[in-house]
Image (cartoon, rainbow, N blue to C red; front, side):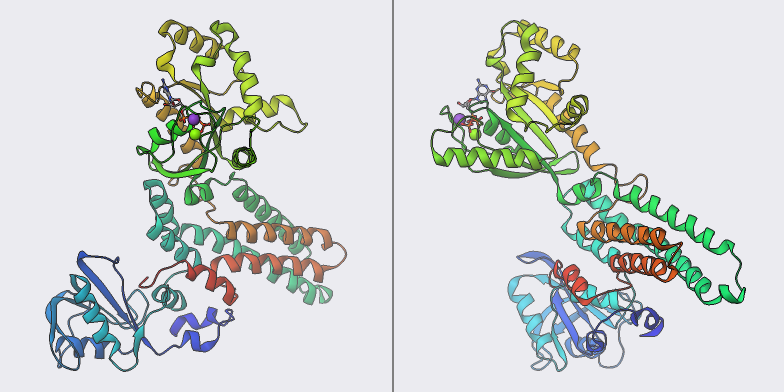
Length: 500
Ligand SMILES: Nc1nc2c(ncn2[C@@H]2O[C@H](COP(=O)(O)OP(=O)(O)OP(=O)(O)O)[C@@H](O)[C@H]2O)c(=O)[nH]1
Ligand SMILES: [K+]
Ligand SMILES: [Mg+2]
């Protein structure tokens, strides 16, 4: 276990999980027909596996160097394929153990034959989901946030997601949490020293004041990290964009235009859409989960009413709502357009309950985009004057004229949409690394809460105050995996596939 032993003591992991002597193997490249498939092997028997499968009886290949070999069945010696083999002696491997790789032709029969050959060797078994990464974690090659970053990198579908995941895998988020953790440890050590030695006057009085300000600074930093309006989580999970509006405004047409396929049924019959229809989009490198919803009206039948209920629910949860308006319904006198649209918005969006109306208006502007659809049916002059009126009227969210039929105005609309989505996700490369997971958020919130326990008891019960710091430390430790419960590890590794 080498140098990792020190912090492994803090992990309540059954020792058999750490010292698993099995050698594992799995197909690490994607499933299905492909040019090259990579089969990975890790564990103490890796060198034996390599010898038996490649006929390299005397010497092993030089470390980390590809060698073209005949790959054979270990028992019958039948030729299975010719491919590249690589040898990674531990600890300089992904898992920290002796490992090997076979790069073979990606046909299903070749892969099956190689996997069967490996499985027939003694002490060698198929890997479980995430087991390679789990071994890397136990060997101290990766922290838990790095493991999660790796998982996100494997699942990243857009450019911005890839950047954020890579940053996390590189350890930036882990370092931030590690830094908080070591500062908390120092605070705890000082409080405990004060408890133990202050009566003998072996410790100066200023120590506690220092701890006070350190704890205070930490609280502020963690709270700032928490106050990111979920940008990192949004980038990781996708921005929730909901299309809403009256029946027949062209909501489903907009969904289909944006995802460039007939995902939702379009028809001139009002009340066509009932179920929420979803599509994933990549908007300028940012992930968007777009939902089309039922047109809002007092439903005629119970099914439509349920559709409207679901639509309203989606709007409430949305990061951004595209409110679609049929432009032919706009007043022909452009001066009246702002008032008309204010009224339209108040029907589509849930009414803000109390609070400052100015604030409510600002929040609406941020979370809404008006799409004035069917612009092909509106005279050019009326459009221009309406646009001018809308620009000059305060308090309305930005509005774009668009025709789903001719796609006129689509470019401008996409530019506005992209800049909104970008703001909602933040730049994954600038500033401090983002909070990316609800799991981290929960522990950080509990950590901040525990720190307020410190302040609460600081003047009358130092033992309880110290307990607050200890608790805060435990929660940060749960994020990085340094202080771990097996369930947390299970949750993290479960998200990996076999071969990772
Ligand atoms: N001229 C014109 N017609 C459009 C445009 N967009 C949609 N339509 C038509 O408007 C009608 C309603 O379109 P849908 O996309 O089904 O409208 P919806 O808002 O999803 O309707 P519901 O699901 O019933 O609420 C269809 O006949 C579309 O062809 C447009 O840009 N121009
Ligand atoms: K319709
Ligand atoms: Mg529809």
